[in-house]
Image: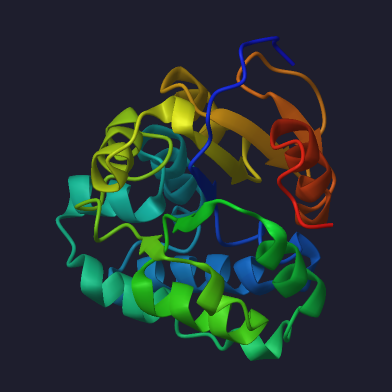
Length: 223
């Protein structure tokens, strides 16, 4: 963790999938399988090639969707509807501890996700925490630019009308925090290990974010 002057925080940005609920829930595994189904069944990509291309697109473009848009000119609406045709309630339910923790955070709360709005709404409503978030910034709002593209972070700050120094960002992927840190945001990695100049804090679960906020927002949390 780097030492730096403590700014006046206004916003906390949360990633959605495998950040607000545990990776072990398995929802993203099923969505990942549906991505491969889309590539094979809807696009005719050979089954042996689909996982390789998916990995290549993820590494090069940030998401498989962006890669398919760039290299195959697909309609993103068709893709998003197909891959997110999954009910989050089959994987998890309401999270009273998350609801309570979010209630204690005296910052504007925003979801910043590479998913789309319908999926985000379903996940948040299943967790029973939708009311805590003033805004969902999804991939469509960002014109399908996505984390970790620096353009996506710039656009987020434009939408919020603040500087990066005013924001804390919580994500489960280190690569999504590198451009966030470059934009001046304070970064919190969950479900992670290791060390990086892009990561200010590492915690095991989203529930441990509160302990970090007690340091960053002294005397501000209500418990």
